[in-house]
Image 1 (cartoon, rainbow, N blue to C red):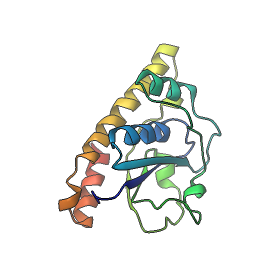
Image 2: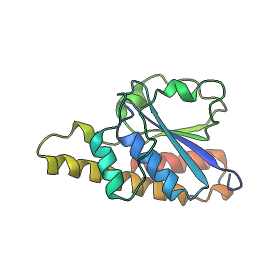
Image 3: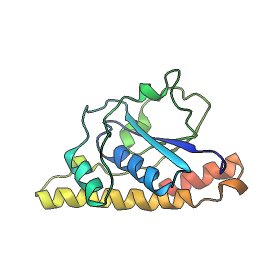
Length: 164
C-alpha cells in the first residue's frame, strides 16, 4: 500500500462535523500518501460552523468542504476506497452501500460534538475534544506498518484503534 495513495472514506450520519474533521486530518497528516473523503447517510447539507471554526483554529484550509451523501462514493466512477471508517454509532448501525473493491472497514465510535449543549465555550470545547481524539486515532493509524501486515492483521489493528 505504501506505493500508491490510500483512499479513506469517513462516514457519519449527518456529515457535518466528525467525518469532515477526520477528512481534513487524514489529508494533512497523511502527507500525500493518504487521501481522505467524508460522507453521510443523511447529510445535513452544510458543515457545522463549529467544525469549520475548529479546523480553522488548527490552520486547516476549509475551502471546499461540503456535506455529501455516501451514495456519491458507491456510484460508478467514484474513487476506489481502501478503507471505510464509521465515526458515529448511528452510521455504524445502518446498512451501508456495497463499496466497490471490498475496502477494509472499521468503526471508530466518537461522541457527536454537534449535540453538545451549554455555553458557546462548552460547545467549542466539544469540537476541540473531537479534533484531538480523531487526530490521535488517525496518527496511530498512519503509523501502522502497512507493508508488513497482511489483511487480517491490518484489520485487527484498525479495529483496535477504534477501541482506544
